[in-house]
Image (cartoon, rainbow, N blue to C red):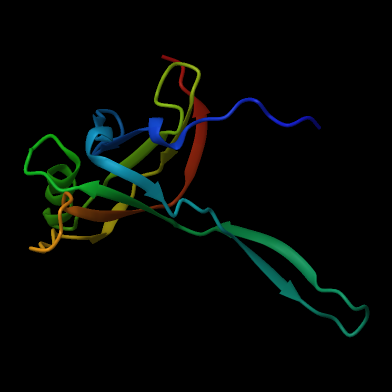
Length: 152
């Protein structure tokens, strides 16, 4: 196989969150990164007295913890305030997350999480010796992720 000539820059993505899975807020302007989106399938194993290898069977998918690093702002329509409002609401959910590594254009892939919750939310730290913006984070725990091309 020849070396690929098609790549996507990490700095060009789009991230959105929603409380209903229909109306999405684009929070790309205050999100630094999306990490932790690793899907794990349970696999059971057992051994018999005969043979050297295990007998295996696939099981259910485990939940996924998607971590968003966000720049702290006090703007109601940006990532920190949107997430804080969801987190501080009684019972804290649901919340949906989706992101497009290619930037959210028609034809780009979009990864979408099922209805989830925010189990971890980081409030802002302050440090008189720091020069950069305040960085916080939130974790969105979802049951599944799915990938589809953006149609429109």
